[in-house]
Image (cartoon, rainbow, N blue to C red; front, side):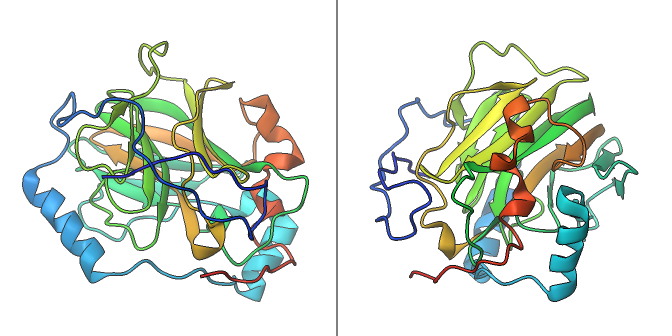
Length: 282
């Protein structure tokens, strides 16, 4: 079960000590509101994480860095899952966003970005507050989950269910971080997600905060003191899909609904692939 706390270090300071961890204040649910996944997939996820350690942070290849410098946030997209259970398609749009479309009876699948949104071996410009992306819901018959994950992550598990992964599950409106059970209640004033809604996910460097937005409004902090020190990991955008759905993922190629995200303080391309590489701390 994930544990969370407040990070009291200075903003963007890699020398600040790691946070002290304590349990999140919301009550935990032993079971989800819906039958999320069979028990054998829970055990398979645990076995996967035990078998495959988290990948260390890496520098991007020169041609990828050049692509980021040329295309900015449009360089980011989503990878098509290799698993045969994924019944759908992942395609780039002309505007630089990515569409994920799944067919009916597609089992729960996690789709990760092709580039990290938080990169441990790259520095953060002093005026940056964090990184951010958005997901527009076109259709959703079962659930969509929006969040983050480190590689490798079991692609048959939704974001937030396994190690170093956060997720906001849009069917039951609960938040998850390393939480294979029923998650924790998150936003009482959001009554439900409908077609056309936009859910964003951001990471605030200073306090190690994962937060979400809803139709341009920033919601309360979901998790505080996670992915710190940030130099230890590369963190990817994660979108979980199940059954028939269509979503559009935007890393800044189009204008964000959350207006603050359109400033340079939240542009992923100003951090990942930047020329400054900080020292690595164990």
